[in-house]
Length: 338
Image (cartoon, rainbow, N blue to C red; front, side, top):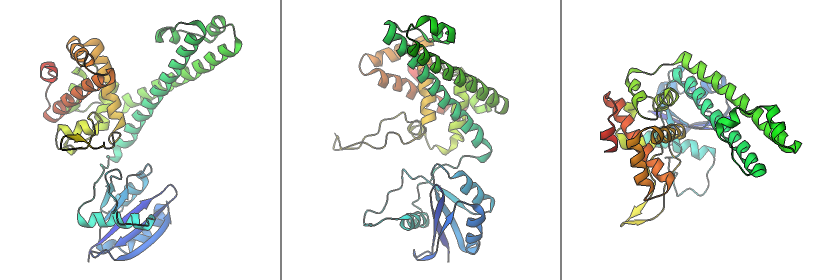
């Protein structure tokens, strides 16, 4: 008789429940997050174990990788897509693990993509860079706000980049305001150095794959954005069609309609935030440097909000990139933007 295991993973421990084909529990154990404790306990069930389900929590890498190395059939559960049984009056770790095992047995488990281990670290390094870029931008805006608050004018980003610590003392009479500017400027300089260090390390380890090289020809997509799109997309074959891809990139709306009326909305944050960021950045640059895309954006902006018009451009770019990668074709601005 086949067995099915569900693992409810937490920050420092996990609960494993093993069920048979009739949903009878044949094994249950709470263990610390240590493969040396998890694998020996599972060993006695290995022969009949058809699969193991692990939640896609923030700390799943060590467990999924370790179980796969031991030869187990491991499935990563998409926790956002899992619907709990509404009849439950009381839920705990055991019931969550049992439900994962039940979904696997029934063939109803919504699975998350297990990103290849060999490329996962470099992808996460690029994610770290994007977080540093956001933090650097926040500090840059903070300095602009201090100028506007105390002088009534906002300097450009390039003017702030040329600002020195000594220059801040000369510009602001109040020593406390000058200190606020200098401390923020020091943090910004540190972040800029780390961003450069990460970029150098990434460029030294990864190159655009053949199917992704044409992304550099898309208006607004440079080297870093092309690498981000490549690493966040992974195997393009995991997306059934272009609609799945742009949905994964968070570039479509989420609404529930019935009889033509809106009855609520879904989870708009379901998808890949870093892929969304990459296409939104590309849209900003494309509007700036490509006249045909700028005309499309301005036409949209005249009818709706700026952010919606910008997202429409990002949506178009994402659709174009999907077909370029999937079909290995060059970018066609007429096909993409009419």
